[in-house]
Length: 93
Image (cartoon, rainbow, N blue to C red; front, top):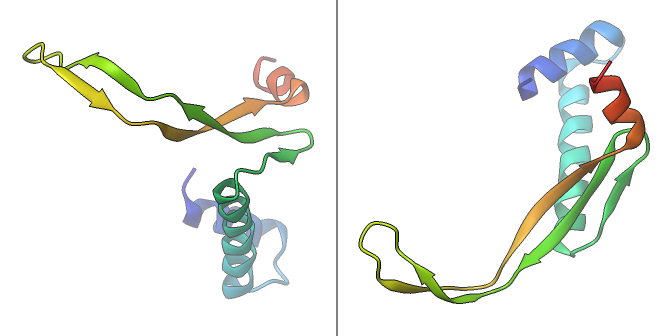
């Protein structure tokens, strides 16, 4: 589902809000998630899941699959998501 589809869906459920208000709500929601992840905080959304940062260690002996040369891979942060038990049950019905 894309951003415009989310706005359209919210507009059908809340017709008293205009499009710009809905865009502001969505932008604020996602911006707050971005800001928390930049600060390496964990985000818990009850009934949906958890977003968290996982640090991937650096690798000194990784290989380039094309030519087999050794390459250095620096450490980096990855965003991970763990679905809640309730969300998993809903998806697997």
